Amino acid sequence: MARVPYLDQQDLAAEHRDLLKRSANIFRALANSPEGLRAFHGLGEFIRFKSRLDPRLRELAILMVGYLARSPYEWSHHVEIGKRFGVSEEDIRALMEEAEGRPSKLEPLAKTILQAAREMTRDMAISDATFADLRARLDNERVVDLVITIAFYNAVVRVLASLKVDVEDDYQRYLDAFPLPTGPQ
Image 1 (cartoon, rainbow, N blue to C red):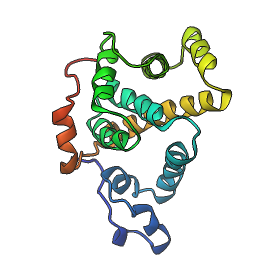
Image 2: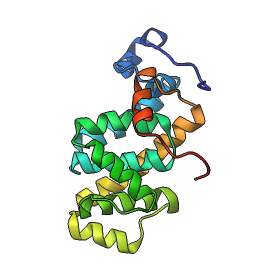
Image 3: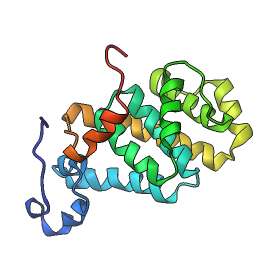
Image 4: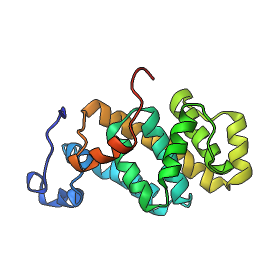
C-alpha cells in the first residue's frame, strides 16, 4: 500500500490538474507535490519524446534498471511501453538472460546499452571500457541522453520503492509473463 494518498484531478488546484491527464499511480502519488511532479514529468517527457537515442534501445536500458532494481511497477509499465517502441518479447527474454550473466542473441549495441545500465545501476557509473564501446557506436548527444535516461530511471525506481507505489491491476499480466527475480540482489 502506498505511503502517500493517490490523488485525482479534483484533489488538485485548477492550475495543477493537467498533471494528472494520465492516471498512473506514480503520478497520483507524486501529485502530493505538484511542482515536484511537474519537474519530474518534464525530464520524463524529454527522455520519451525529445531524446535522440533510439527508442527501442532507450526502453531496453529502462527495462534493465527496472529488472535489476526488482521494481514491479517500473518493469511492468515499461514492458508495455517498450512494446510500443519496438521491444519484442524475445528482446525482453534476452535482457533477462543478460542481467543474469548469460549470453543472448541481442545485437552488440543493445548488449552494450544493457551493460551500461547494469554498471550505472550496480556500480554508480559506466566503466571506461563500456563507455569507450558506447562512444564508438553513438555520438556524444546520444551517449549523454543514455546516461540521463539510466540515471533518471534509477531515481524513478527509488521513488517507487520509497513511496511503495502499487502496480495497477492492468499491469499484473506483464509480471506474470516476465517475472522479476526473487531473493537478494
